[in-house]
Amino acid sequence: MYRKTKFILLMNLLVNISGCSLHSESSYNRNEMNSPAYFTKGVIISVRDVEIKGTESGVGAVAGASVGGLAASTLGENTATRALGALGGAVIGGIVGHATENVITSDKASEFIIQPDKGEPYSIVQVNDEDLKEGERVLIIDSGKVRIVRDKSN
Image 1 (cartoon, rainbow, N blue to C red):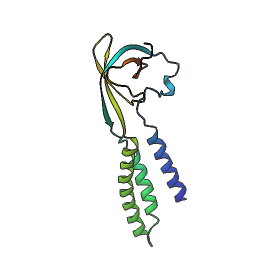
Image 2 (image 1 turned 60 degrees about the horizontal axis):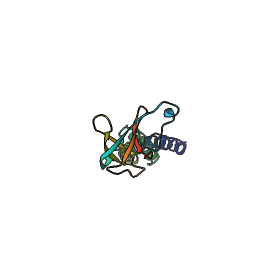
Image 3 (image 1 turned 180 degrees about the vertical axis):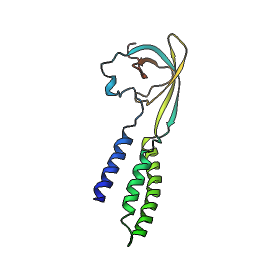
């Protein structure tokens, strides 16, 4: 019973955490399909690498505490030692789960300063799958989320 519960909690943690991802020029959410996207053209005036902090939703801490508490509650000879084991396991599991969630959901991306052909410059943070560089012409696509891609129309 404990193994099955631990397995279910661990899978729940992994599914919830892996659902978090950075916006990329080559990946779309399912709800973005068949919805209109508008674009303008512009040029990249600056690029820098940035670190994206991991999420702190509490899912990792709760799952870790649950698994740690359940696992440690099986240790010991009597009810008192099992209760202390469960408490210690929950605390340690919560700390480990929180740290794991933060590591799994953190990532690297690029911050682009874009000068549209018309309008004021602005910044966009996204994964740089296309290895875009300063001075390159880009299409600025807006489908509710703004992304840039290399302009291949030249």
